Image (cartoon, rainbow, N blue to C red; front, side, top):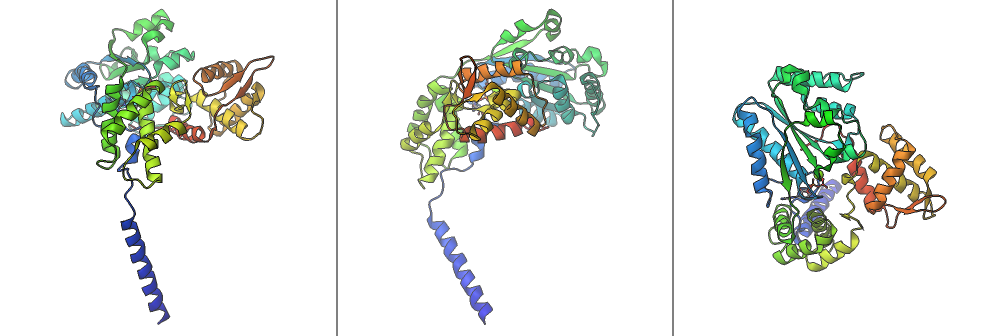
Length: 413
Ligand SMILES: Nc1ncnc2c1ncn2[C@@H]1O[C@H](COP(=O)(O)OP(=O)(O)OP(=O)(O)O)[C@@H](O)[C@H]1O
Ligand SMILES: [Mg+2]
């Protein structure tokens, strides 16, 4: 008897909860995930011409026995990474339609500071069989990759993203020697490896020695111009359509976001602002994103020299350094850290993420770079001190995600 009344009580509660839920307004988001940095949208407004240019360059890879090398370059947030990933998806789809095998691999060289790391990532994706890499040199790994491509009859299109960061941090340029020459080193890979070099400007090539420069060979180039307000407005409008419920973001709000973002890094900041403004609207249980939500979001997002802090733009060791600085600052009440404190905190971060720590002079150079981008504050006197001007909580969260992404074995696209 008691059991029946308990059941009736639970049923009443469930009906009441369901009714309450149906009364509460729907959130503004349809799919928040599509605004995150690693999402590749189907359309790229204002990059159709460049995408077609790349499709034309890479078309013969599917139909003829050729390999292609292309530079994609343009300023910060001009869509280089997303464009290459979009091309990769297109090429893989076209290959399936044509009954051919093609693999697109995207490696961010700013996260892979040694040829060993680059080849490991590549091997993870194209060796097709589980093969041990312990004790293998980068050349030996490349040999396995070349053999696998030939055995499985695969074409590889490999994007080396942020090659300029890799070279400007003085990393071993031998990958830029090995990869374009893979056909000479391993004839079985002939015509199977095509390359895309991605950079903010082509200046990095001036830092290469002549032999490496010569092996890059004849490389076509696609330049991505900067977006202005009209382009950012269209891109934000399209991305909002994908992320929000119909009617949740008006054209006025899209325009406002685009204009507010101009001085803070353009489209990258605009998408961050759109996401945060959506969050503000949800907190208010609002059905639409209003100008007030955008203003609030704009004020809430801490900014550096390039707009919203985006740790994904930093190379792996700069991210580890920043992680160390944040941890050390959060553990104490004083505003500054000494260089020794920073270095030990950085080493702890390296241990946590199982990466070999770099030497002190390198860390000092990275600190200067972090200061230039507004991530840290350096006080120079007899002794250099390191501080941070804004509450680090938001950055700390983004940094954790970014480090996990940078260190995951497979770079998904
Ligand atoms: N034409 C576009 N359409 C839709 N989204 C875009 C477009 N261009 C850029 N984006 C988005 O803007 C953000 C910045 O683009 P992306 O990361 O590709 O720039 P980038 O040139 O690689 O920048 P960086 O030099 O910092 O690496 C990403 O979230 C990307 O998805
Ligand atoms: Mg990029």
